[in-house]
Image (tube, rainbow, N blue to C red; front, side, top):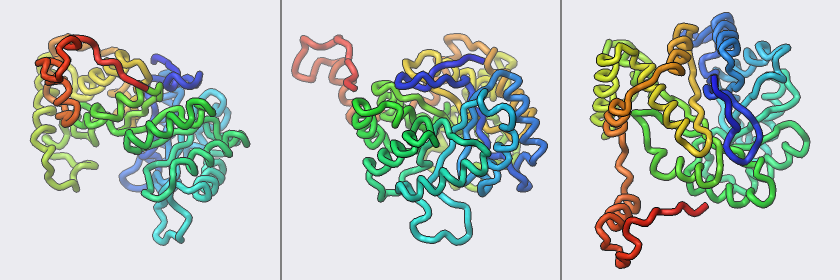
Length: 347
């Protein structure tokens, strides 16, 4: 297990895999209490130090189970949790969303469930469309000053909002925005358009959830198994995702590796090449799932295999990215003296 700081704004060290706890619960489709313990223990034994949870996972039960598992090991581990939503059948107005009030209330409840006096990284789980960014940052600042959280972050926020927050916090306190969380995998690379370049430019750490695309990249849906994607309807992306899975299964056939090893090995190389931390959040439901994820840490693919996978999953970047690239390549941007010069990202 490798370790790196969470972005370039903090000295907070995290393990290269982050353990997601969305399956920590007693529901029929969850891992169960003992199964959660077995997954947690194996992850820690493998050198994992970073745990990701949320107030809504399993209706709060994930945090409660994690709180018991942290007993005696809290100081060895980094705990990330999120707020914004609720799994309650009835939700009183003003108790959810990104507001400072909702943030403080949720943090107090999470601290009780987690049986700890601090949260290492707190993020709003998703934007609510209402709360201004200054209010979110002010709430995080208050909680950092009281010691209830150590760092702030943003989950599922568009790049333009995260970039604005990054600029606001650079001079005041970079720990207010240590990093972000976004979906990213071979089958879902939309973050390459704006989110990942923005994070690299501002030195934000990035937690990558759903690194196996909801189970798609395991190949289980082709075997007729069900999972998180079963209920999804067809979309314009289905054809591209099928092409990605074809490429993964082709490489697996050539190498004798599993599709999971292929997908995570590709992602690991991306993480190693990045100038900021890209940390996959793996959410196993069984210890066997976790073992397959851990095995990818020693998997190496050839350059040709990486090229095949890159090409299969590459997203269309759209305007202005493709227009600018074409202009630089052809010299039709009106200034041929600059053709061939490197594009320098501006933070």
